[in-house]
Length: 161
Image 1: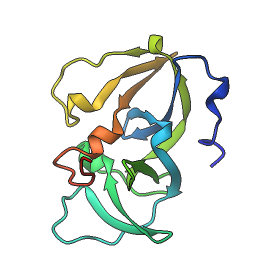
Image 2: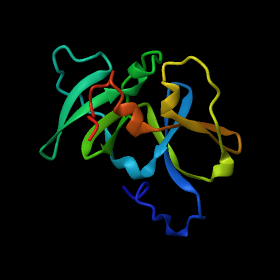
Image 3: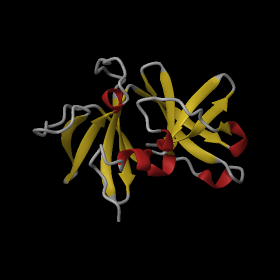
């Protein structure tokens, strides 16, 4: 937990921290403040008639947590579940949701100058769920509004309050 438990008080003003993870060949970033914990992948209990990208649910210390395979959601080539496969547990609008990703990279601090708007192109991700493209050196991150993505109607996970 120490990797994501960084204190942001020494960050420059306007900078935000993003947890970066990989799906297939792409690298994504989500707001670190939405992340509750990172866990190794364990086979969830399947729920009948759930969309294919919802792998099922796990019991996390008494809380039933739906698990979304982001590779299936984003139409990636099916990846193998291996020792690098992790579940990022998110806390979104007082709802806990887990997302399966290929691997977690690190925590990056990005300022507004490092973030560019995403081009309007047709993709598996709703453009309104992409905050922009973050760049640090040679790395390019797709920054996701994970709360908006998980609360979209097709997900059926988080209700508006």
